[in-house]
Length: 411
Image (cartoon, rainbow, N blue to C red; front, side, top):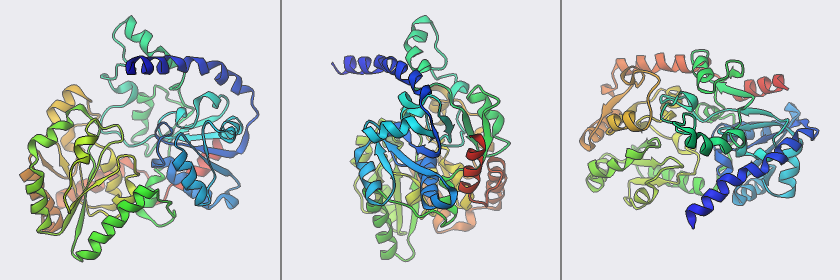
């Protein structure tokens, strides 16, 4: 029955196409900007921080920013905090989706509301600088590279409805622009600006609005740091993949926690929102291992972190902006590249940090970064800066003001 329900839901998206076509007839207000994230399920990423910036400067910018969500709790929380937000299927949500001129999101227009998006200017800020191949460049993506007529037929609803092409795509540097042009198969719609989410990471320009789960997590981190004045925060954010289950095969978490506790190190784990191993990770319970909600925005705790541990996640490119140690825990690299994603660049040349494949190696690398920083050799410092300057044209400047000017120029 579950599979049948999913099948009906998938094919029913074709039913909204007449509504989408009719929405082109709706007059749109250039001052109304709509924001949404992660298929409407989260308050996160570039849309979150540009929305907060625009809301906090809306009078001088002369725009009306509105957050659109598929989650009523997010709408309630933002509304109570004094921000304008609507549930996407409410009357007001439908109305503003029809008259808002600008759609800003990090996946597809369905982050806000695809059915009412006809005629709007759609700006995809995406959700990360890709180490791994994305969209049309990803040959393992069966949706974009169907192998036969049956697969083409199955992919047809997505192609002609909720994942229709966007008007403008954000890249963070001229170096990356050709990559995004290739991935999205459109050489004319890629523009260059920084990521608004990094404004929060490198400055205090944006006043954040924390969801209840994020506030709880931040309080836990601060409590740890207040308890241990010499405490360090290590942030572990693995990317989405099938082979992630190997983590539990190579980790003795009790031993791992004991080793880190000796040096007052808090290990925060942030799962990918679409992870297949949420239940296994949720069961982890140690005083100095903090499980973060997979739907919380990563930048809340990342801002307080001393070290980033990742594998193939784009989060490490952003972390280059704060010039702190990065550890690459790539225990399943061979499986990943064979069965999940190919990479755009040679892995060793684009990953400026220690590479480890075992728990013992991870512990040692964390020790090096936290209590023996002299191991963070000049090689990694130079490499971090080199890659940072390739990925970001203006790495030391906040991006939201420039982003607003660019979007206004698109109207």
